[in-house]
Length: 589
Image (cartoon, rainbow, N blue to C red; front, side):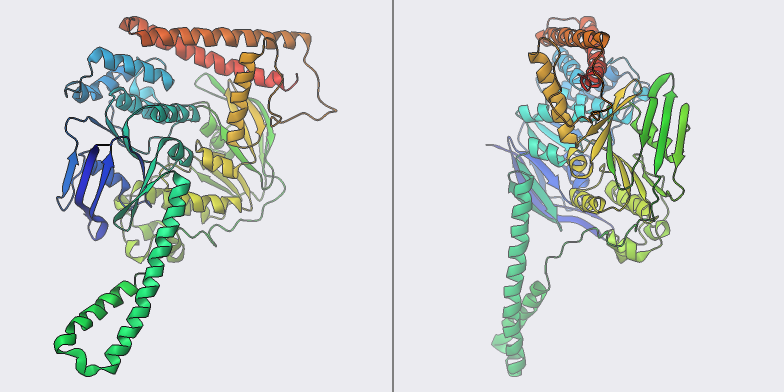
């Protein structure tokens, strides 16, 4: 395999903080690499240097294979809110089309339509200023992938994406023969896309061929070997120290080299590898939790003419861990604000327990005062130290922190209030994998009630007991099981529907059952509705395949492509609605 990229002796510092110094590595054609490191140690900075958006302090060499095309996905996607989606993508692709990459404008446009359809972006004539954060991220990804670059550099590509978009991206990158370097905290995504893990640790780079589990095992071996070598050096140091004390006259002349070697040994012997990790012990002791948490009675919520919640009844229980899932824009965050009292329901009543103390971690975070220091924000040096803000960082301005460091500080401000109901809205965004693992362990032992909105499948699988599935049109279903079990149920259902000529029984008992004495059977009318849904879903699937084939043929005009893309989006929306109705009826079948 040819070497796509050779790095030699690049360095980066900010003031007294050294991110990395004189590092070097190679990336070969076909490598799909996940870059892992704690927040604030230079992951994003390294990607920006490779993409030409920043520079190495020490010069060094960054050598790409001649004539390869490169695309960079930054976490902060710049766009014009007045542009349509299509104009935004085309405006960002001008350099690609003018670079001599061999990609013609009509070919780019065709790929753009196909990828936008895969991401369920809908009409490309919508204005960028009207889009949600997840939709903006899908536009950025569509622009990048449509360029068909040889080498992709991606910084947190799954942030703000819903699960359908993550799975599409996962499938696309797994199938495509490209070279990839990315930062990601999504461990499932990492395992299914990447064949190599690159670790940036204490200013050095380590390469591990294989998946995330292999990385963890080999990293432990590396650290154990390093510390074993340190023990050997310490034994040698003791013998040298005895020699120094025993032969004072030997400190001159020919023995000087041993004196110099002694000082080198002393320096090496002090270098025991100890990991700096977030320590959550004693952080956020849970306040006493009463028997009543939050009781929802016939809740309704509508915004902008859209029904987000309709006749919702639920009583949150002590110590339960519930996940909330659904497409972007379907009302999950609005529901959380309803629970906290920030938003009032359009109908129904919410009752909250008297002892309830809510900790609400918002997706958008909080607005820190950028001129404040870390210590201004949290005036507790003990807690700051446990969250990896040591003494030399206490006077660091908020504006100088990385995105992940800000998130970590924000999390500390939530937990130190001792909540007994913890509501987390996309908590995994911008947190590094090590911190996520520690946060998961803390939440597993959390002695309160936990409500999580997240598209991180690994995070949800480890933590939640059941899911509230937001299906659209105000319908919310309760699914007993974790996120992977839910996705497996949906896929089994789709397979079952394809193979069954008539009604199909549920293929997974994880759907919350009715008790025997309250369960009723389908009415004749509902039985006919279920049969009609099956037939209609088959028609929609056939129509979607036909439209996708036409779009891939290269024979459609721009207007016809646009029309086909809009029809596919309408099919996806109708299919989602019908599938959820099928799920509701199938519980009675």
